[in-house]
Image (cartoon, rainbow, N blue to C red; front, side, top):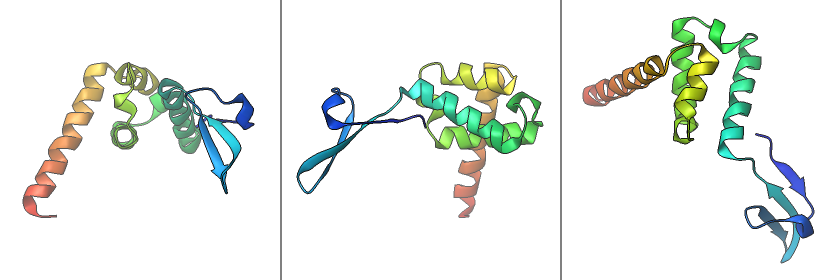
Length: 112
């Protein structure tokens, strides 16, 4: 996800400092959420072996489902970023999200 490891003395207020037996041993600087989304999209492209925009509709819907599970749409401009990567409109991404929500509700109603 693009985290950076640091010595504890270099830690800033937003960094996570890890301690072992009461002694600070390592600091981790996490990337901004928007940077994490870029890393997630790049990893998805590597996994598919092609740009996400070249995936078929079903694969794009699955990508949106996975991205939603990872919190991609809680990031500011997340829908726009994902839409750009998939080569679709924001409206299409929202449709994919609504479709997934409807399917989940249907399964819950049936007791699946």
